[in-house]
Image (cartoon, rainbow, N blue to C red; front, side):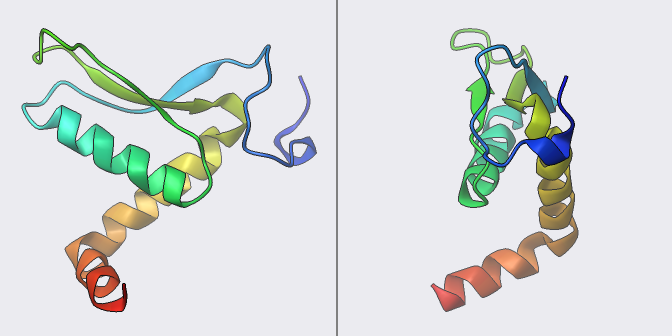
Length: 94
């Protein structure tokens, strides 16, 4: 398997697995998953939202290409650390 440094685009390779970068079965799991998917895509990381359409008590996941997993987790961690202050700043700027 090529190293992460060898991949230069965010597009998954045909043989590459999609791995969960977030999962939740909380009552607000779908909303949080949608938010995380949006943050990742705004940062150039394609993401897939996987979850139950009928049974909302099951787990929702956001999945990304394997070679983007570390970068995606870093972006999520930074967004969580910035918290609601960053969201307010983005609204003012945008």
